[in-house]
Length: 115
Image (cartoon, rainbow, N blue to C red; front, side, top):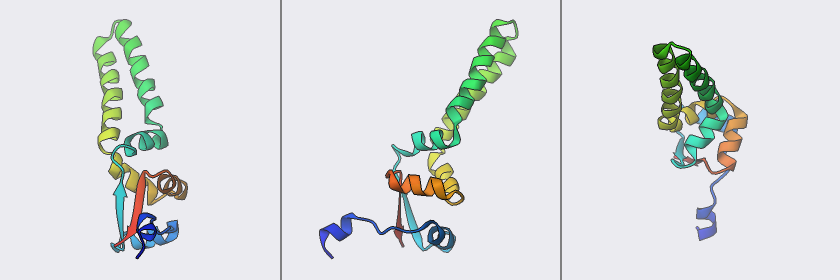
């Protein structure tokens, strides 16, 4: 094989990916640096975390510090959990949504190779 053929990965359609993944036909390589921001964008976790943290601060300042602290902690933990579990979440999303599969493979977040 030439070096050019080795550098470019074969395109695998979403339908083939969905059929072959459970049977172990493909090896999925996730970029650990690009996956967390991509998953955060796809799941819209940042606006949700802000929607928890902002009111949590307001509730704490209004005289209910424990409830406010719980809301702030929930927002922070949500964001950190998505960041830590990004490869698993990405695999779940790409196996179910063709648009996410196309974007992830196109932007280098994930690479799919035949096993």
